[in-house]
Structures are given as structure tokens and as C-alpha cells.
Length: 218
Image (cartoon, helix red, strand yellow):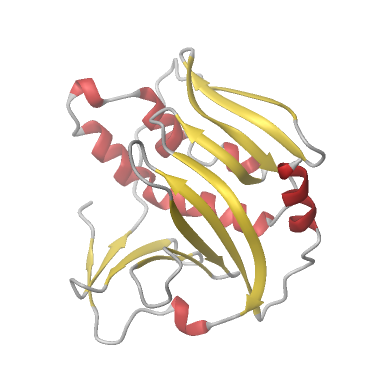
């Protein structure tokens, strides 16, 4: 019932205009941690992800330049992430995506590798499609960095599901639509809370004046 109500709200918002921004709110939770709010703002040119505070730290994706910037106010620093090359998928790389209908306009998905469920949840087909695309673009920019982190990790911490969720198949479930629920094999979870359209606030998509920026290690 809750998913159906959320879907009706999403589909009833209407078509965004150029002077609008989509505002998504999720409740995220890391294993062993307390739930926390994640706010995602989307325009045709940008995606901003933060904790819901206009003056706090944030990630800013320039969708046209395919550049992601992590703004850290306390350090007075903006870390810039650029997409890089990825090695080819192994010949036996065969993740499996299973879906089945859920509430009207949604479907339940399960993405697995080698019999292990890497992520599962519920996606809404027609809800905020531009937001789903922007979220996939952000994952794509980070894929090469995520691969490097995986490769430099101790063997006991190298899990194929990390490569599924963060590298080679990072946008697979987002192609199904906007995530309403998601749980990863690590125990990390995300649950949709709300979606609204608000007047565009250009200042939220700019770097603070005078902030130094450096490129993240490649």
C-alpha cells in the first residue's frame, strides 16, 4: 500500500520545466549505523547530493562535462573526480537481473552474481526518469575510481558484487526506473521518502567562492 501511494504521488507531480529542479529525499542506512537523510537535486545540467542542508558539504555532478566534485567546507577543498578507462569485463562475467511486477507502475528487481544477491529492491518505471538517468551518470563517472579501490583492497575484501554494483553494471537497475527501495549485499539500504519540484536555485549548483580544487588520484 505504501509503495502504491508513493507511486501515485510521483506520477502526479507533472512535467518539470527548465526553471525547476527535482528534489528527491531518501533515507539511507549503512550497516550498523543510524538512518540518515540524503537529498538529491536534479536539473538538466547538474545533480547535487547532500544531507539536506544548503550550506553543508555536497557532491556536485556536472552532467555535460561528466565531472563530479566533492565540496568539503571544513577543509576548504573541492575534490574533482573524472571518468577513466575500465578494463574489459572477464569473459565469464555474467551477472543476472531478475524482475517481477510489484505495485502498478513498479517492479521488484534482484541483481545477482554467482548465486549471490548483489542488490535488490523496487523501481518505479515512469517516476522522475531524468533523476534516474542522472544517478546512473554519477555512478558511471565514479566507476574507474571504484575499480581502483577494489583492485587495491586485500583479496579477502574483493567481492564480485562490488564490481557489479559500482563498476561494470553500476547503472543496470537504474535503467528500470527510480529506486523506491534498495538493499545491497553489504547491508546498506536506501528507501524513498519524497519527490517534489521546486524553483531552481542556481547557487546550490556552484562551488563556493575561493575554494581550492584538486583532481582526485587517477
